Image (cartoon, rainbow, N blue to C red; front, side):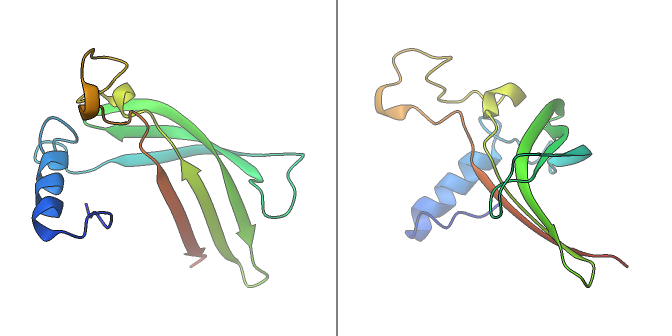
Length: 128
C-alpha cells in the first residue's frame, strides 16, 4: 500500500498504519485482495475513448468475496498487446470495512470516511 496524497512523512506513515490495521484492511490477517474476472461483455453503443466492455467478476477483500462489475476501455494492438483501463468505485462497507462510515454510524462529524474507494486500473498484457 502507498499514499501519494500526504507529503508529510509522519502523517503518511500514520495513515498507512491505520489503513493496514483491523479498522480498515487488516493486512496482517488478509495480505491480499484478489479480483477474478469471469466475463467481459461488449458495450454496443460505446464510442472511441469511452468504455467498450463491462467486466464481471468477484473481489475478495478481508476474506469476503462479493460480485463486482465495472466498465472498462479495452484495446488490442495489431501486435497483440492488450491495454485495459478502468475507474472502479467499490463501496468498502460491502467487504466489512466500516470504520467512519457516515451511512452506518451517526454523529461522526468531521471524522466521516468516504464509503467509496476509487481505484484507477491500467493493465498492459502481451500474449506469451
